[in-house]
Image (cartoon, rainbow, N blue to C red; front, side, top):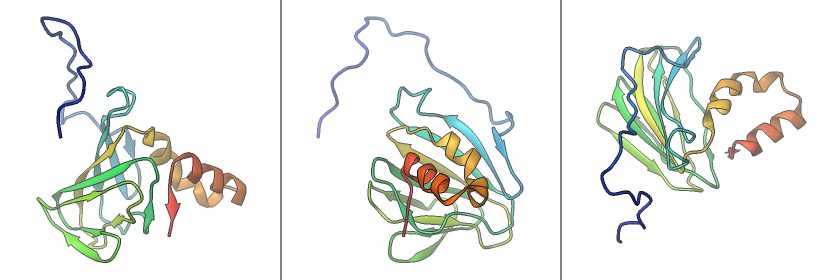
Length: 158
Protein backbone atom coordinates (compact mmCIF):
# COMPACT_ATOMS: atom_id res chain seq x y z
CA UNK A 1 0.00 0.00 0.00
CA UNK A 2 1.33 3.43 -0.86
CA UNK A 3 0.18 7.00 -0.66
CA UNK A 4 -2.23 8.18 -3.38
CA UNK A 5 -1.10 10.59 -6.05
CA UNK A 6 -0.75 14.18 -4.77
CA UNK A 7 -3.88 16.30 -5.09
CA UNK A 8 -2.26 19.53 -3.95
CA UNK A 9 0.60 20.62 -6.15
CA UNK A 10 1.42 24.02 -4.64
CA UNK A 11 4.65 24.83 -2.84
CA UNK A 12 3.84 26.50 0.46
CA UNK A 13 0.55 25.01 1.60
CA UNK A 14 -2.55 27.14 2.08
CA UNK A 15 -4.96 28.26 4.77
CA UNK A 16 -7.87 26.00 3.79
CA UNK A 17 -8.79 24.16 7.01
CA UNK A 18 -12.27 24.44 8.51
CA UNK A 19 -13.29 24.40 12.15
CA UNK A 20 -16.62 23.33 13.60
CA UNK A 21 -16.82 24.18 17.28
CA UNK A 22 -18.41 21.69 19.64
CA UNK A 23 -20.68 24.45 20.91
CA UNK A 24 -22.39 24.73 17.51
CA UNK A 25 -25.93 23.30 17.59
CA UNK A 26 -26.64 20.14 15.56
CA UNK A 27 -27.92 20.59 12.02
CA UNK A 28 -30.63 17.99 12.62
CA UNK A 29 -32.42 17.94 15.97
CA UNK A 30 -35.25 15.41 16.10
CA UNK A 31 -37.32 13.79 18.85
CA UNK A 32 -35.05 10.80 19.39
CA UNK A 33 -31.74 11.81 17.74
CA UNK A 34 -29.60 14.78 16.82
CA UNK A 35 -26.98 14.85 14.07
CA UNK A 36 -24.06 17.23 13.73
CA UNK A 37 -22.64 17.45 10.23
CA UNK A 38 -18.93 17.62 11.07
CA UNK A 39 -17.66 17.13 7.50
CA UNK A 40 -19.95 16.42 4.56
CA UNK A 41 -19.07 14.98 1.18
CA UNK A 42 -19.52 18.50 -0.22
CA UNK A 43 -17.00 20.01 2.20
CA UNK A 44 -14.41 17.21 1.73
CA UNK A 45 -14.57 17.11 -2.07
CA UNK A 46 -16.30 13.74 -1.85
CA UNK A 47 -13.53 12.06 0.14
CA UNK A 48 -15.60 11.26 3.25
CA UNK A 49 -18.52 12.34 5.40
CA UNK A 50 -18.24 12.52 9.21
CA UNK A 51 -21.26 12.94 11.49
CA UNK A 52 -21.84 12.98 15.22
CA UNK A 53 -24.99 11.00 16.03
CA UNK A 54 -26.55 11.70 19.42
CA UNK A 55 -29.29 9.41 20.69
CA UNK A 56 -31.59 11.22 23.11
CA UNK A 57 -32.86 8.08 24.84
CA UNK A 58 -35.92 6.55 23.15
CA UNK A 59 -35.22 3.44 21.05
CA UNK A 60 -34.11 4.49 17.59
CA UNK A 61 -31.82 3.40 14.78
CA UNK A 62 -32.01 1.48 11.51
CA UNK A 63 -32.55 -2.25 11.10
CA UNK A 64 -29.97 -4.29 9.14
CA UNK A 65 -29.15 -2.93 5.70
CA UNK A 66 -26.19 -2.48 3.35
CA UNK A 67 -24.74 0.03 0.90
CA UNK A 68 -23.27 -0.79 -2.51
CA UNK A 69 -21.09 2.31 -3.00
CA UNK A 70 -19.96 3.48 0.45
CA UNK A 71 -18.27 2.05 3.51
CA UNK A 72 -19.50 3.06 6.95
CA UNK A 73 -17.66 3.22 10.26
CA UNK A 74 -18.98 3.73 13.78
CA UNK A 75 -17.10 4.90 16.87
CA UNK A 76 -19.00 4.97 20.17
CA UNK A 77 -18.31 8.13 22.20
CA UNK A 78 -20.68 7.69 25.14
CA UNK A 79 -23.48 5.49 26.41
CA UNK A 80 -24.43 2.15 24.91
CA UNK A 81 -25.17 1.58 21.20
CA UNK A 82 -26.22 -1.77 19.75
CA UNK A 83 -24.10 -2.45 16.66
CA UNK A 84 -24.93 -5.13 14.09
CA UNK A 85 -21.87 -6.60 12.36
CA UNK A 86 -23.82 -8.63 9.80
CA UNK A 87 -24.08 -11.66 12.08
CA UNK A 88 -24.71 -10.49 15.63
CA UNK A 89 -25.91 -7.50 17.60
CA UNK A 90 -23.22 -6.43 20.07
CA UNK A 91 -23.29 -3.80 22.78
CA UNK A 92 -20.96 -0.98 21.76
CA UNK A 93 -19.60 1.15 24.59
CA UNK A 94 -17.21 4.13 24.58
CA UNK A 95 -14.12 3.37 22.52
CA UNK A 96 -15.70 0.55 20.49
CA UNK A 97 -15.36 0.74 16.70
CA UNK A 98 -17.13 -1.02 13.82
CA UNK A 99 -15.99 -0.82 10.18
CA UNK A 100 -18.41 -1.95 7.46
CA UNK A 101 -17.09 -2.24 3.88
CA UNK A 102 -19.29 -1.77 0.84
CA UNK A 103 -21.91 -4.54 0.77
CA UNK A 104 -21.52 -5.32 4.47
CA UNK A 105 -24.76 -5.87 6.37
CA UNK A 106 -25.00 -3.62 9.41
CA UNK A 107 -27.31 -1.68 11.68
CA UNK A 108 -27.23 0.35 14.86
CA UNK A 109 -29.67 1.40 17.52
CA UNK A 110 -30.05 2.68 21.01
CA UNK A 111 -32.07 0.27 23.12
CA UNK A 112 -30.95 1.43 26.57
CA UNK A 113 -33.41 4.28 27.00
CA UNK A 114 -30.42 6.44 27.98
CA UNK A 115 -28.55 9.05 25.91
CA UNK A 116 -25.66 7.80 23.78
CA UNK A 117 -23.38 9.30 21.16
CA UNK A 118 -21.21 8.05 18.30
CA UNK A 119 -19.33 9.17 15.22
CA UNK A 120 -20.38 7.85 11.81
CA UNK A 121 -17.91 8.01 8.92
CA UNK A 122 -18.89 7.37 5.28
CA UNK A 123 -16.26 6.90 2.58
CA UNK A 124 -16.39 8.19 0.00
CA UNK A 125 -18.47 11.19 1.05
CA UNK A 126 -22.02 10.57 -0.18
CA UNK A 127 -24.83 13.14 0.27
CA UNK A 128 -26.24 11.55 3.43
CA UNK A 129 -27.75 14.77 4.77
CA UNK A 130 -30.89 14.47 2.62
CA UNK A 131 -31.27 10.88 3.79
CA UNK A 132 -30.95 11.82 7.47
CA UNK A 133 -33.40 14.71 7.09
CA UNK A 134 -36.07 12.75 5.17
CA UNK A 135 -35.88 9.13 6.38
CA UNK A 136 -38.32 9.93 9.18
CA UNK A 137 -40.98 10.67 6.55
CA UNK A 138 -40.53 7.37 4.66
CA UNK A 139 -43.72 5.94 6.19
CA UNK A 140 -45.72 8.77 4.58
CA UNK A 141 -44.20 8.13 1.12
CA UNK A 142 -45.94 6.01 -1.46
CA UNK A 143 -44.32 2.63 -2.09
CA UNK A 144 -42.87 3.97 -5.34
CA UNK A 145 -41.46 7.09 -3.62
CA UNK A 146 -39.99 5.00 -0.81
CA UNK A 147 -38.27 2.60 -3.25
CA UNK A 148 -36.81 5.56 -5.18
CA UNK A 149 -35.71 7.29 -1.96
CA UNK A 150 -33.80 4.25 -0.64
CA UNK A 151 -32.31 3.47 -4.06
CA UNK A 152 -31.14 7.10 -4.47
CA UNK A 153 -29.51 6.90 -1.04
CA UNK A 154 -27.83 3.51 -1.63
CA UNK A 155 -29.74 1.83 1.19
CA UNK A 156 -30.85 -1.80 0.78
CA UNK A 157 -32.77 -3.44 3.64
CA UNK A 158 -32.20 -7.10 4.53
